[in-house]
Image (cartoon, rainbow, N blue to C red; front, side, top):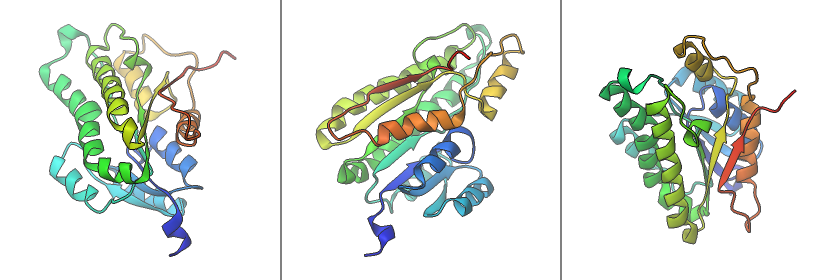
Length: 232
């Protein structure tokens, strides 16, 4: 058995940029990595940077593709759900297609990938970390469909934690505030520039919270971590 065979395995979705890429970099020293995402070029570049990692380019809303990609994973120590979308709009202006798309990506895809990987997570007594949002705790005007998907993601995590805890699987929801990422700045543009946060978290800081959840002692269950930008 090689040294690589002894290293724990982590799968990070949304690893092509932003929080997902930061999480991958933070986990690389201690884990072999599957880098999930849709941008195959970005994943290859990140894999070249991080020893022991390889791209895992899968469209998470394609159920058949996800099932095929998950087939070879027999043991998984860490699953980090970082992939997601954020589309804003008032209830009056948000069509059903936006609600469906947001729930498909932010909730259904997460639930299905987790379901498929549960045997591998149980085998490793693994950790599942879901990158949620402050919007998963409080809904603001203009955020209805996005916040609803994040509230649902929190409910999924709570149920999963109770169901899989006896199998040794730990589940943590991470709720960051505004993060300095491409996705976050896209959200600001959707708001028409009317609201711009004075302070942002760094993606690396959110990755630090994930690291805390993943490395917590076996007698500790970190159920939720809430992060907000600190005052200067």
